[in-house]
Image (cartoon, rainbow, N blue to C red; front, side, top):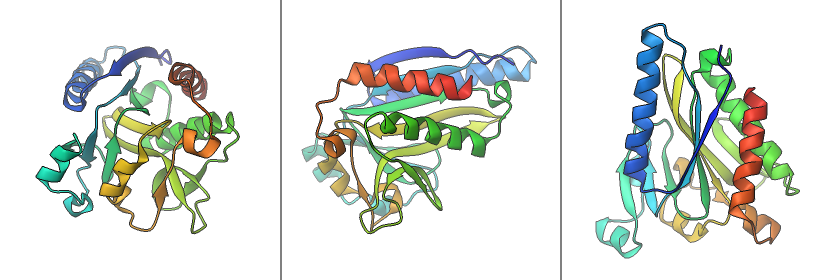
Length: 221
């Protein structure tokens, strides 16, 4: 079982290009696994230009803009093959794509998602925030059982033969106005937030990446 994790920083990368490069790592890992060869694990961090993505079980009605309005927001719209409903990606949001062979870590998909959530909960605790889970929804929330429930991190994954792709989107200093054009993750009664909004701090994105990378590696290794 290979628990080493290769870290890759793509910087700012257009969503479809990132998806294509993810697929290459994902398919390469699957091919090795099918041949009975040892597999590697990759943790990719990046940001995307403004884009709305819809999961395979999502409802297009949760995008509240038409094509012309999307263009006015300098945003694109992509049907993707991850789980979950609609979400937004944009500058100031840390997107993480773990391409892991879960057999290397001796865990199933549910435990994998919970381990990602745990890493993000520990990360925001560094900034004095209490992250929690919400029953029936993936991701990390603040005040999930109150009328002020708001999501700080969305999670949507795909897996095949226990190899994962897609991952999480953590709002650091994201322009949250873009979320007003969707029902985030299909919810009409819950909000979204960011680390910068909650703390009032000017957040160093490079430091955030290193902090979260270390926590993810610690949780899985």
